[in-house]
Image (spheres, rainbow, N blue to C red):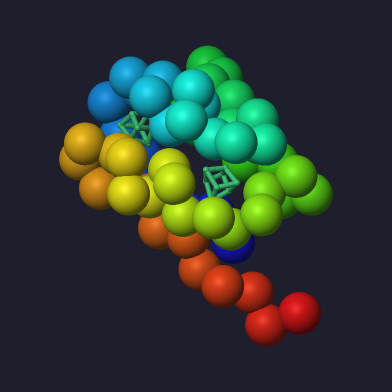
Amino acid sequence: MFKLNEDKCLRCGGCVGICPVAALELTETGIVCNEEKCIKCGNCESFCPVAAIKIEKDKK
Ligand code: SF4
Ligand code: SF4
């Protein structure tokens, strides 16, 4: 599960570019994650300069 702290997010778009499966999109309301595509690699979480992203492992 992709969680975004919208108060922290700078809308820099960096996480969008670093996602290996292009699951992230920068929209008018912020960063949106396509959970169908996301493989929980954690790249976006590590990359974000302000630590606005948290990737939580699902218990599917
Ligand atoms: S890298 Fe972080 S600050 Fe930049 S758009 Fe993504 S979530 Fe927001
Ligand atoms: S965890 Fe990996 S696959 Fe999921 S949105 Fe972040 S960079 Fe993309």
